[in-house]
Image (cartoon, rainbow over all chains, first blue to last red; front, side):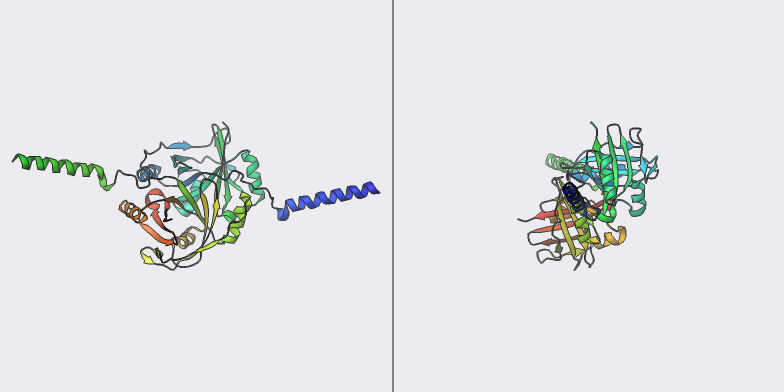
Length: 177
Length: 177
């Protein structure tokens, strides 16, 4: 009898603890542990015009533009479906982070969706993370689904649609090297 | 005759130099000399909901919100006219910069204009500057007009509408203390 009482008590304490930890279904643990913002990205219609203009304002040489497309390491998915979306990218080193310019090049993507809805503008802020798939799940559990993800030779990205709660899209970036 | 020739030559060199310096009406000097991005600002409808959500994702206490309104040191102007615009602000320290949440509280402002046009989203990135009025003129000369400016007890801000060339709005911030 004493053993059963003890067991019940331990179990009750356990349940209450778990309940406190996930009160209202929300974890007490932060999702983002490294708060440093690593990129701010601007969607533009004409990246060549935009990188010239940014370079002039900053007094630097215009960075080369590169093309981002689906990569076998983590094929691009948009709202859960494979996508052949492409974009042209260029990066400015601002000292404490990068300003990224993104010109959508067709295919279904969060980039094209943003351009169609808002025109040019700031699309997301990015964070460096570890275990990007686990991070996606944590955000999903808090009502912030992955709108698009993909990878490149050496890394992975995920766009988290946090519009409804944080007011914007976040990008998670994981470098494997 | 020799003197006139010499004078003409000097003047010609001077004109060519000025021409090179302002080729196509553009200055070779950068406008932004300190490239560090100090703030990224998100326009939200409900700052209390948004600061709770951000605080939870980051695992920090929600920062206090404050009200920004016209201040005698530099009364708020929107598109060249005095404005009684107000907004509620809250700031998160991200280590390398601040994430600023802005809830427009009425009056004509770039904040309300953005919310009406785009809904919630990232409104601007900010830079710390010196001689904010001189900076406004430099941007204006390059086709990037001031859409709104104002100040507070100890500082001044200007929103530069660089949408047409850079794809977004920039904020200049000058602290006088």
